Length: 527
Image (cartoon, rainbow, N blue to C red; front, side, top):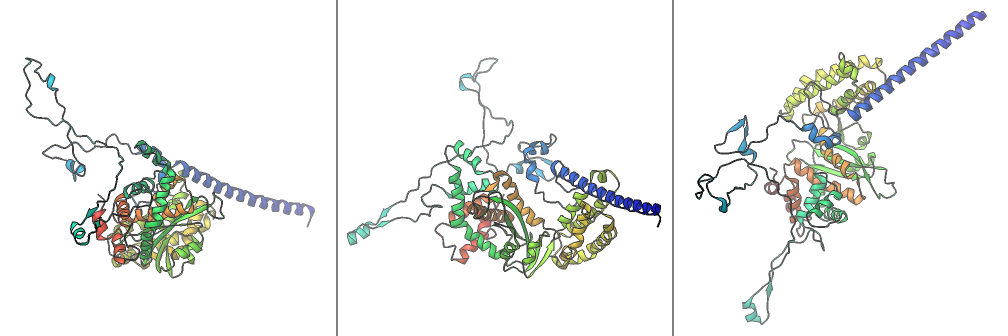
């Protein structure tokens, strides 16, 4: 080979290497641009997955980030408030009645009168007689909460007949209920309200401290924290433990976990992550149950211990830790698949013809659209309908992935969405096996959302005991809500009944404490 030929070969080799380097840089640049666009959307754009097409609503764990501008977001100058009602009642629109809007509220009257000293006719000066009153308008009147001290006495009686017969005075006193906490002025209502404010309304204890002070009682947040922790340990945790045992008897469960910062954990720094796990049975179950569990880690061992004794279909995301749970059939979540395709849609995709990411997104939408239509069917009919209508959509979806996967950057947003779906195909299709199974894990994510909202307000748990107490109270509140109970009234009812009762040893008493029991449904039913 001549010197000239060698130089030409060397230049061609260098040209190939540079071409490969340019291709790699272009691919890396595209991936970085996707990451930047995704992060910008994550920070500034809507978190909803909804498009112009109507599809199954998605939970939004970031919804709490928009609470600060809630008034501006939802304000509508054209909305009609319920009009003050006067007889005869008139319907203002289809299915709406003014009287029904205020039916749950007590009514009071405020009559403006002419002062007796000035009750004279402005024309002739004669005395005016009252002939009636005219309705002007109705207003919703807010009455602030107030506190009072309840001094509890025990009546003492004596029996004169026994004294005459024996010569000794016999005293008889009525039975009084035990206190919620010994040597404390906490009552069932005050503790239940503290829990309701923190775990339902997401009001942290330092804000509640200010509210108590405004009502006349200088009550420190440490006292409020003790109320929550001690009542959970002494009374509420056995109730949750019973719910948990009942939950493991189910055949279809949903599971999820979310980070939480817990202070003063043994052998851990305060800034390290701990986790709040949640288990839930199906929404159409006769006894909806939601159980929260605090754990210092997210290891598969935690999942294994939490689900020990359960066998059946388990709905989760693709977290590998659940693979350690034996005797379960994992059903993965199609909402996660759709979310990945949604994240891969760029602004240029929205403004142009349908992109590959939008095509994948629409495949998922078709599945959710069919699911909404099948929601009222019984499990057997739902299974048949899925195989008839959704099986062809799935077959087309997998075939489409195989045809486009080789032409997409594997580490880009679209590439990871395609790989996520294809790699989990068997678990994503498992919901077709049983009509009881769900297409998504939205039930568990919706259950954990109140915790995520509250976490943004109170930021961390002060100790492992505080995290356990939070898990306990959240379990009771979310299970009560799932059974259509008022959470405050349910907590108050429990704290009135549990002290002094034999609920730990008496199965019937424990069953009556469950939110789905006829007793609790009568006592604590929500509006």
